[in-house]
Length: 130
Image (cartoon, rainbow, N blue to C red; front, side, top):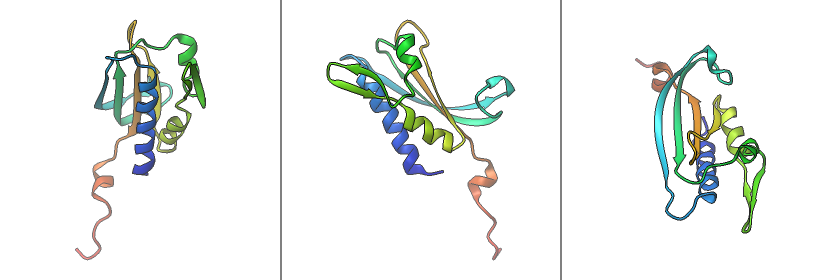
């Protein structure tokens, strides 16, 4: 995995999310381990590491939420708000995905999933000198 690209994707997600918040709103970042079954639809079944970025802002209406993965998904008085297309592409290149949800009447939740590494992948190849 390209750590630099993933870092850029996370920064893009957080920066985009901040642009729609009001003064006093907050962003919460959590990490999760998730087992994904065949019913997930858009991900291959397996073990994933997820980052959930949630806010308590005004949320996104359905029309805006449907455009969130476009290069520009919203316009404000200050200008255009970039979409999450680049971050989504980076996560897909790494075998993961991004999803955007509105869990209640307010706030937005972005879930970034990446396939978890196995113990063998973490330890690397055996040392040939051993």
